[in-house]
Length: 119
Image: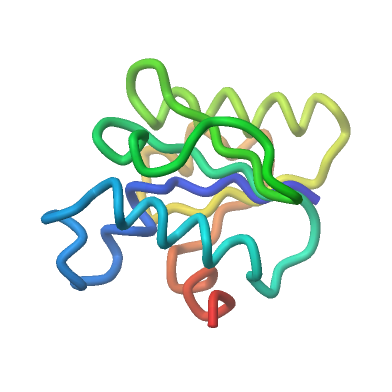
């Protein structure tokens, strides 16, 4: 199983002041994903200022991908890449348009689903 996480969408689901420190919010999300109660590999897609909070690359079962342009296009690319490799894909986002774009790759769950598992 591969979980593709829309970092901006998940971070934005909590009103905890993330907008004041996008890099710090990304770093906190990454740290939580490292110990999250989920099966399989996790792909965390970061964009914009959030990219400076976590280096790109694999760290245990979490792979951080820095979107070269917009995060949505990279999430679509990562979801379809995993599906094409035969993985069961779940995308974490509340973005309805993005959910339509990844529908052929796998299922979509909202940020609350993931946040409940971050402990």
